[in-house]
Image (cartoon, rainbow, N blue to C red; front, side):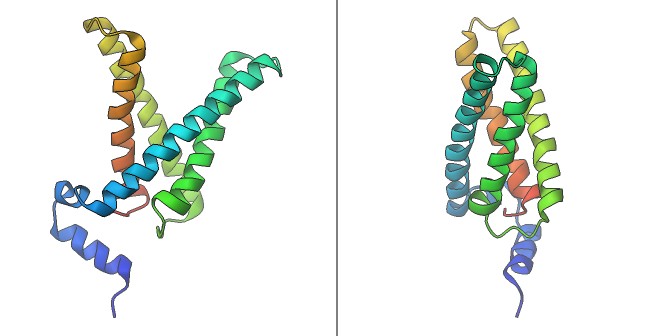
Length: 150
């Protein structure tokens, strides 16, 4: 009897990425990811504020600490709740997750620069729009290549 992972892999090789992404199971993963992303963003922001205001840490250094803390928590929740059942090893999965986060940061910065330069959109609205694009990109990369759940 074939394992669930083997059956998923066989199905993945026979269908397009587009058709695999538009399934209820993937929608549920995206909903969980959205909840977690929002929560860890707020935790990272709170960490930044606490480190700057109460610990006297440099803003840039505190941003890095908050980013690592938020990404680590996001990875733990992604592994155990969003993409449960992954066969990816913990250390390599975390490394891929952090690299994906760096890609998301690059997408965010590039799109922010373009939107602020070429549109009259308020920077806060632009940041929200950009976060949707970057977040969806990172979700797909994690779902398909890192955690291999799509």
